[in-house]
Length: 163
Image (tube, rainbow, N blue to C red):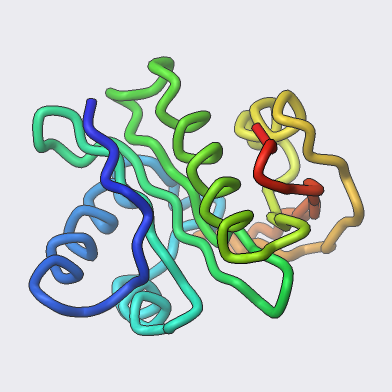
């Protein structure tokens, strides 16, 4: 497995490859029923943000997973994290999350925030890595059939020694 080091987002030739890989991962990893995935234009927009960065996992040059994050003053936010089903159970999600924590700490973040759909199995990883529930956003996600789902907001105090 090869993890591309987290880097500032940019829409250059590598950024376009990243966007293609992100969309491949997104289409495989997120069920449309829950409304968690982003569109290509949403991803392209955040990749152009100077405060954002992406970390992509590739196995044998095949896109396996990604994490998309951004800084806001002295806090970081994990916007999206996904691992394709064929690559799950190999520690890729944990590795991506550890890289996000490290990059956020290097950029001066004191805390990392995220939201996860209530009932999403990824919440187990977040709790195992020390994230704590700080709130709930009712009806945050809107699924393909109009169904609504709550988001649980989580936070992790970070520093250079975080997970």
